[in-house]
Amino acid sequence: MVDSSVLVSKLIGALIIFGSFTVKIPLIRNCIEAKSTEGLAESSLVSEILSLTISVCYNILGGIPISTWGEYISVLAQNFVLLGCIWYYGQQPAVDTLKKSVIYFGIIFALMALLPASLRFIMPVMGMIISWSGHIPQV
Image (cartoon, rainbow, N blue to C red; front, side, top):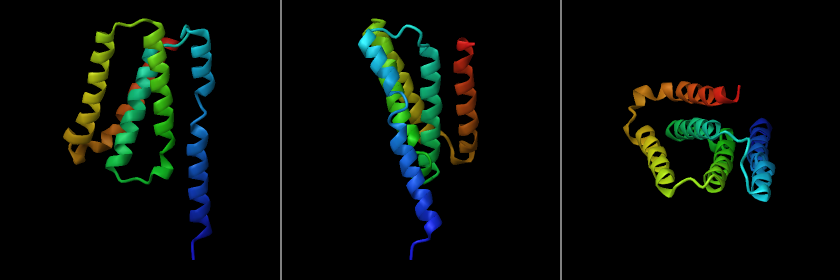
């Protein structure tokens, strides 16, 4: 027999993940309709992307059930769409976009493959510091 508290926990986790797919949709829609990302800070989005990426990598490497952190993936995807809007509407040169993408995937590789297991405990702290530093320009 399935423990009801485990079932409720899994259901709540699934609902949170499902609900997270709508977090930034209104903002994405507004940017596309206005054909502008005025008011959005690229540095804030990049820091949130890096922070969420570190969290996703940490949870994958730690074998933590996706039902406890799966919303990070959908918010991360929505942030990528917003960042793409910033780059597109800001008419950023493709070379700059490519450089930034290579750096991003380099960070993922370093976290997933090169960071020793004994140092993984610093990943959540790195994510918090990066997240906080990205919101400084908004203040």
